Image (cartoon, rainbow, N blue to C red; front, side, top):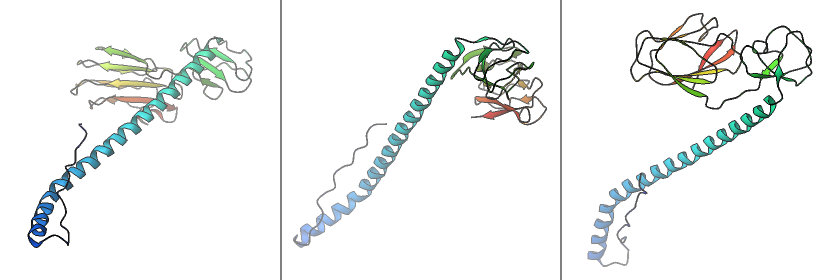
Length: 222
């Protein structure tokens, strides 16, 4: 949108003007007022849009910086991770990688257990964080990987959510431009939108599913 221009107003009438000049200036001034107000409103709208754009860039930059810092921290932590072993005693803060998801987790409090870290959210915190994730195009039934976004083709298909899910895991979905009968998101044993039911995809707008807890399962986060 180009920078709006405001035309200068004609000279305003003055009490000292002769009657003829006063009358002419009055008519000309008020005749120009409508155009002036229209241009002024356009300028105000333009300024508001510029401020909104600047604010959006600031939020995006802040979010990108946070993602970069988090990803760098996760990478540093993952560098020394060892394979998790059931029954092994781990110190508080120890980092391991799961043989189920191949992701890394940090121990919250010293201890041991027989439940894989990907499922033991009380004792292990996930360390991997992909800000964007891979973009994968599919045209047949597919089991989703966490932190990936799936672009659906124009065929009837089921996108199976991961069988193992931890708090904070997400899966992105990009439906086709028109609704396709038979396209679903399968819950794969977890609750989906609070129910023990698969979800029919009846929208064309992209969305993201985030795993919250066993009691809530996967929810939509925009």
